[in-house]
Length: 214
Image 1 (cartoon, rainbow, N blue to C red):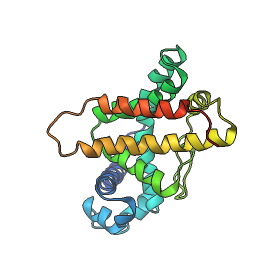
Image 2 (image 1 turned 90 degrees about the vertical axis):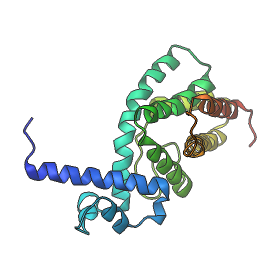
Image 3 (image 1 turned 180 degrees about the horizontal axis):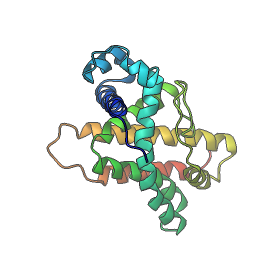
C-alpha cells in the first residue's frame, strides 16, 4: 500500500473533522435545523466550499456518517446472527435482539455513536425508512439480508402487506426507542445499564408476535 501524500492526509483530516462536526450538530439539534455553513465553521474550516468539495451536499454528508458507523455495527451484529442461527432465542426475540443490541454494544465502546443513533432516528421520522434500505433524501442504508430474514420469519404468521407494515414500524420503533433511551440519560449521573434496552427488545418481540390486525 502506497503511503499517503501530505495533501491526501490533510484532505482526509478535513473530511473527518466535517463528519465529526456534523454528527454533533445533527445529534444535538436536528438535520434540517443545521446549515452547511454552521458545520463548516464548527469543523474549523475557513474554506466555505470544503463540505461541498468532500460530500457535494447534505445527503452526501449523511451518507458518509451512515457508512462510517454502519460498517462497525455490522461487525458486532455478526455474533448475534450466529447465536440466533444456533436457536438461542425464539424467532421474534432473535429478530429484535439482533436489531437492537449490536447498536447498544457499539455505543458502549464508541460513545460518539449516540449521535449516529439520533441521526438515524431523525431520518426514520423525516424520510420513512422502509426495510432499512433507502429514504427520500437519497441516503442509502446497507442491506442486511440476515436481519430481513429474521424479521420475516418472526412475522411469518402475517400476510405480506401487514408483514411489510410491521417491519417498517419495527425499524422505526427500534431507532426511536434507542435514541430516546440515550436522550433520557444524557444529563443523568447514573450509569446507563442494559435494562431499558432489554425492555425495548421485549416490546419489539411482542409486537412482532401479535396476531393479524389488517
